[in-house]
Length: 157
Image (cartoon, rainbow, N blue to C red; front, top):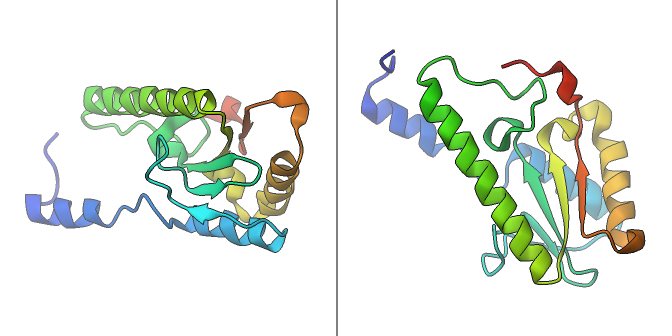
């Protein structure tokens, strides 16, 4: 199916899709700051340009959008049009995410991944508490922690 808007309009729409300072990222930043954590933002010298970098505990935080990074919750819906393109795009995103994760762990960083659906209002406090607790503790040497949010069993494709 052809796009319903002209090329210039589509370009303008897509240019407004942010990769930094998203609403979800700002919510998590505020919640972690309120819990006493201090961090740097968007360190481009690290693989994947993490959303938050906490140098003291050598921990990075990624706020992953359910749609773009795809973990199968109800917010992850495969677009109906141009499905082969989107399937390939999401597969590339996931492969890139895994490569960045592996590189960060190899460099000695701990990685916290927070999914967008874990930051909705009803889950924000528990998500921030869990994230802050994980950042502050050794967790038996665990290098990666994921806060999933919504159940992936209710996913709609």
